[in-house]
Amino acid sequence: MMTDYLTGLAADVYGFDKDTCRFLTYGREKNKQMYTFEKDHRLYILRIVENAAGSSGQTKAEMDWLLYLSQKGVNVPSPLKTEKGELAFSVDEKGVSRIISAFRRMDGRCWDKNNPRLWNKKVFYNWGKAVGDMHRVTRDYAPADGMEKRPGFQIRSMISEKIKSFPSVNVIAENLLAEIEALPRDKDSYGLIHNDLHPGNFLIDGERIHLVDFDDCMYSWYAFDIGNALYLALWMGRNNEAGSDFTNEIIACFLKGYLSGNPMNDFWLSKIPLFMMACKIALFSLGCDCENPNNADADKKQKERMHNIENHILFTGCKVDDSLFKSRIP
Image 1 (cartoon, rainbow, N blue to C red):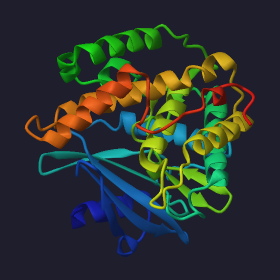
Image 2: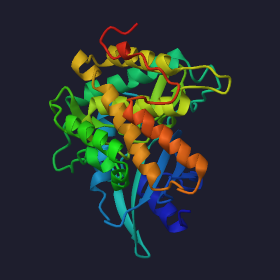
Image 3: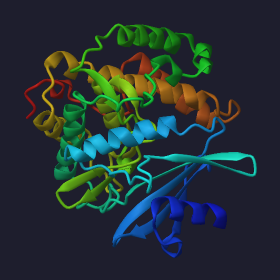
Image 4: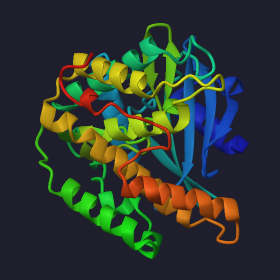
């Protein structure tokens, strides 16, 4: 938990009453802590991340993009600048370097595949529209003068070296990676992306979708942002406990919403399944690192996943309508 020293420092730097500061949650790797605080009758998020390098440049780059998006009307958390006008700052305490930033706390509810009000065609459409709006306005984004640039996406970094233990899958992965690396990188197809648009990273606020959690943002293809979002949505929410299948509703409605916000030609729409399969192979390779070879069920599951990759199947029993990846969305 954050110390009283850091609480007081953050309160001084951002100009809020430290008594309003409350702990929210840790990040996945416990190196990130999130708090909420109040300033001028508005709620904000305070984010503290341990960073051995001690540089706040990358966080400032993230906040600079968020500031641009929010000024363009995209539903993202707008950054709060320090009293000195900084987008983030670093501090050392007892030999540990931390990067501190703050932004508006967004309203809304988390998705729930078993709640028809929180997982339906309208949610899928509005989610796609929010992503399309984000990509459209990002085409004209340029970092502020003197600002660090967020990293470029290295597609091969997605896939663990352990995949080489599975020759048939490794060949497919190599061919897929080569095809992706040869794709064009022009202004209309390549730019800053969120990079982690799974259903847990947006909030449903009536007709609005608020996109959150931008700390993995980097430069890549917009089609990758879409493919990653759709693959994770299907992985996590293609079926509910009642047995309803949302597979093609998710894809169709998301893409219809996306295209209403950011037109995309058939060439790039046709590449989205390529990125979806890349996500599948990446997760397969990461699973190899923690697979128990002595577990019969795990071995069976692994063989099933290998079979699916070899036959270009995203999920067992999941029939994706390929015609959806065209500009005419039903």
